[in-house]
Length: 612
Ligand SMILES: [Zn+2]
Image 1 (cartoon, rainbow, N blue to C red):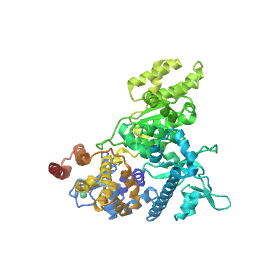
Image 2: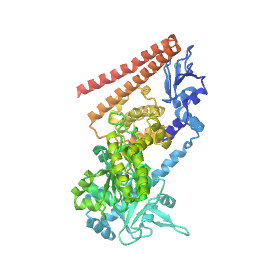
Image 3: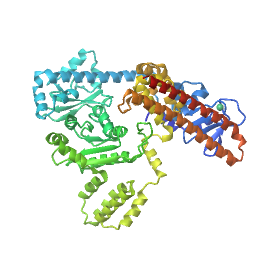
């Protein structure tokens, strides 16, 4: 969660606005005399559930908690953010410090990239790398894969890399911070990786953040990874994600294997939607990366590790993450997908890893994929295989562990099937189990609360997926600039989005844009730049943007319309329709404006289309 999201989530907009304005409760909302224009009857409303405010009087302004403070205090975005951060107890990076931090990180990326280039050069050319080259060809790794994954070789030396990087002007402390050399006892430092096959690990932007290194003799450990650094957190990275994300999105499925070699094999055989968890059991952060790309995840499990606690814990984590409604996943048109995740398990033949299966017979791998079992089936097997179901206490353990899973299955028919199966296994009446399962099922009302407790995502009301999608399009596709410039900043209700849009309009390049933004918006900018958009032709992009603009306009109208209806019904319940007649009329007038603007956008678009 970004600091901006966190501030919005922690603060109650009613509290903040109350510091400036005397609010009166009005149904579920609050109203007051507008602080931004002179009036006698209140037309300024605060909507706590949406975290927004709106004036239905002549000034017609509105927005979120940040825009309120900006306007009321006459502050710029950064100042308002700092004020609210203080109040929320959220720590922002002091101005300037974040820049310095950015620079430091940038150096660490550069160092790792330089190391990757050096190792790669050695693998391709050095005589000493002969063993590494024959190891790779012995395992059937193609030259194309060696090059596209930039595999390398670290020489059998204590300071070859160290000397080289020092020579390029990096400091010893930077090399240590970058995870490439380690401090020696009694001073000085030495290379961490020696005589190993080097596998650069890249983040989803394709930047080298660390290495996996395989021993070429019987040195222990067989695999050595970069230590945790400011840019490398093993639990938050999936190996191969930079090359796999497009395919994952396109095929609507991510496959997670364990090792580097498994990923290399899969990609070599044109299964580019495969990534590796790098030996650990699945973490929350890794699941989150996948969740942004697809709702379908298949995990390849080693037969030996399949039943152990760590694996089951990882699976349970993935299950929880995937069974939440995927509200944060916008579809191509910027709407949000309400579908639930689909999690499947491949159990590998004993003693084999995907690397071997794929290289021996790619079709056998495909069959495994086709036959991947739903997670619940897998849990049935994993749980019952460790129990003796002729014993009463084991039966109750089975019921205890499996019922919660079954109770979470959305589809009623499917749920019944599993209940029946469990009833058969433990010899308990099916109806008794169904009753228990029903009690475990969270009610619709409890569900958002549960999601909130885990703080996985911001409540939908405080997010603006369509606005963010629109900005991603504009930021990632400079060719859309002209059309994007026709957009009114009013379309953006989220202040962070509006700020970004305004800055984008003024800055021809992303670099300039970044420099002109408050440092606390960099994270938001990065996430929009990183968002994966489906590949599309220029024409498709234009129509996607036009669609997006139309929907933003509609959304705004709908928002106004809903507010209008709410106002009317409240006025009716208070028995005084006159109180709001004026606001509603202004509102309707306002509502017409955006549609005129939209019409302009479309007319221009059509004309341009006709000229082509
Ligand atoms: Zn006003």
